[in-house]
Length: 113
Image (cartoon, rainbow, N blue to C red; front, side, top):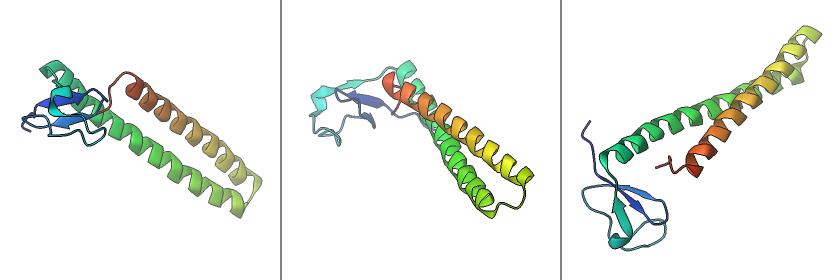
């Protein structure tokens, strides 16, 4: 995969390209308000993008688990099944919160691009 040059706007938006855009798509800032990222910072953005997508997938899967468990709770076949569904809902909620918290940490550290 060819590495692209990355530029960070004063608002935090990351642009991929050989030159900064004519205007920031987020805040409208002109090209001179962009800073070219060095290779280490650009690599961190790429790695963060991958990790952030993995966290997003975990959040999505946790939501799917919740939905499935609520169907099982509604069905209420027997006390054993009900117990498993209730415990699994709680566990999936905790998984989701962990990934959401990590994503928020990435945003706060500027590791979102």
